[in-house]
Image (cartoon, rainbow, N blue to C red; front, side, top):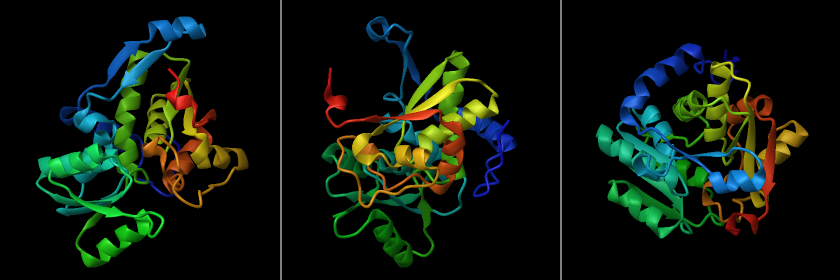
Length: 268
């Protein structure tokens, strides 16, 4: 049973049930692999959930399609380091909409090219000169009929991502789910799925130490923001802070957050 969320009363049991019923038609199920060697080394059974075969190569398509299929606007504006931008561009292609994706000029070229290949317009910025949010605001002023697709702070994004949590928990039961944390869209979706199903699985976040705003938020009990986009190799986690809704969900839904130093992601 879901709790009520002041910033998004629409995120309730009935809505989650609706999304779980309709969205799977448009997405690919995740790929599960038992990590035999890793399980032996760590002394516990580890199952990996990979969204690399999802449309556009990440879980972001779940959120993007659920969000954009529910709004009437045909012009979409969003900001992304790449994965959500690709998902939005492809969803727009399927839904006959157009999109502009604000991206840092340091974004991976393959991600920029992917957005363009799906028909999206890429707007590159120097984040040291202007923030993603500031550039989005400029574009919304230029296109007042456009819809701003937020990558994580939207109940439709959270519900879309909760379908992955549904798949994971349907395979379980698991003692613990470890999930990466950037803006909180995926992790809050996993929490929502767990709570909807009334499962007892513990959920732990994983976050780059260089951008540990979520971990600091959890420790202090209030939403903490980074002063600038974190300099981390995990480009999907280069967020200023958790979204407001995501924080509401995660502050009572996460057991802990593991902070990963820069050197650790590269270790074999």
